[in-house]
Image (cartoon, rainbow, N blue to C red; front, top):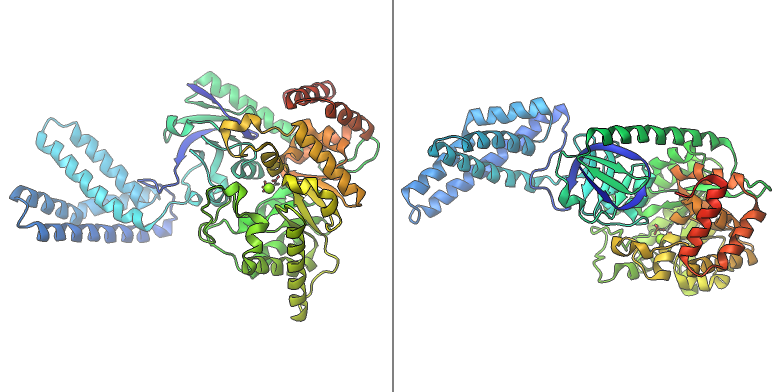
Amino acid sequence: METISGISASPGIAIGEVYIHTHEAPAVPRYAIPRDSVDAEMKRFREAAKTAAAELEDLRRNGENEIDEDQLAILDSHRLMLQDEEFHDQVERGITESLVNVEWVLYQSVQGIVDKLNSSQSEDLRERSSDLHDVSTRVLSHLTKRKRFSLADLPDEVVLVAHDLLPSDAIAMNKRKVRAIATDAGGRTSHTAILARSFEIPAVLGLSYVSRMAENGDTIIVDGNHGRIILDPDEPTRAEYAQQSRAWHQHEVQLMRLNDLRAETRDGKLVELKANIEVPDEVESVISHGGDGVGLYRSEFLFLGSGGLPSEDEQYEAYRRVLKALPGKPVTIRTLDLGGDKVAHDIADLDEQNPILGWRAIRFCLSNPDVFRSQLRALLRSSVHGNLNIMFPMISGLEELQEALSFLDEVRRELESEGAAVKKDLPVGIMIEVPSAAMVSDILARRSSFFSVGTNDLIQYTIAVDRGNERIAYLYEPFHPGVLRMLQLVVNNGHANSIPVAMCGEMAADPLATMLLVGLGFDELSMSAGSIPEVKQVIRAVSVREAEEVVGEAMELDSFKEVDRYLRRVMGERFGLENA
Ligand code: PEP
Ligand code: MG
């Protein structure tokens, strides 16, 4: 049994079997196939065996003058093996019985025979084992060239273990088959963590070397609440975690009772609690967790799937679906935030030395007018189906905002001249996630309908700490006085210009921060849907006056450690949340 500590990225507890995922296609992929694909799998096998046999034939012909009789005999025996009916029947039986892809069946059956031959006393038989191994490797290499494994095809329910998961992997994976995630790399606000929370899959990231310690099939416990994993747990530990898992679910069910209540402080201030979503399917979870709408729809995830650049109509359908599922409720759709750790290689060459400071988000859109135009057209067309707000990411100053706004105007005129219906007076706001934008938020507020503070990036850029790098995760501190001062400035500038100020970074989901955010005057908090009930519970128990007092005290403190300690004390006294 081995316990490893990492970063708690998504709450919950899960016990299951390890499945190691690497970015390279695995040597022997394994995935489930439907019953009616057995023939297609056999066809792939026959073709791969035929190609391998032809290859051996070529080798024989070309090498006739250079290789000796013994070697020729080996090539011949390999070729015969590939044509052996009994061998083909065995593979076919394996596929039909297990409904798993041919590569895996071939690998498994050959491995079984190889092991037997290897343990034989006879040297002859032991030699045959390496022949068999050779032949199967040759066929496997032809098979795997044609089919790349995707996490969409996971065979069983597993715990996904990887060095790192790309956001595109996480979006593609079959969520029903993933009980939990454990990775070596990543931080609390990396996009893998965000997706795990959105999909309500327990996750521990930043484990440094779990992908090297664990092996396929090992038993693993992932404790997302405390940020640790346990490999090969003994029986008492398993039982203890099974019990904790049940208690956690009960706690979740209890919190869901708050769903129909508003997030109103004791003295009557309403704070809107909305959800962050990445794919339209999540809208059901927004409703089931009592969200007041969508505060951030990360539209780039439509672009990170396997299909490459989505068409204007595909985008329109996705936006329309979300808007229609939440009649009357506000839905803020953020324009493309590709780049950084969200790379779509089939859309643009985003291989940069310093992607976090590079060609990302609005910068990418403004220099790819065709991509931007098709998204804005889709958004504007969808506007008649609900309460849409459009939001631009990564605005760093006025020029960028003006350019984006005038492009939006141009696209609106274009659509209107085509006779398309577009809603009038659409709110258009910006994310405040670059320190320069926070510093000039008084100027930006005059041209924006609303602000939404993206603390994930704002903290990263303010403290100069890569949000996905586990080695420096200890510096990634929302309660850093530098960050708190910026938040205060943004809220004050927004309110001085009569626009609402929201927060959609992960800080909004932390109950320890809730009093502080209410006291600072945030009008809206947006977070993964699963976090809404807990934050609501805090808001309903406090008054604005009390929250403002907390802000007054916290702003006097000199370091994030002091702020953290102070908030833990206050929350501990009020809610017993000191371990939050
Ligand atoms: C943020 O930066 O806080 C944010 C919400 O955007 P993302 O996490 O997608 O970068
Ligand atoms: Mg961001």
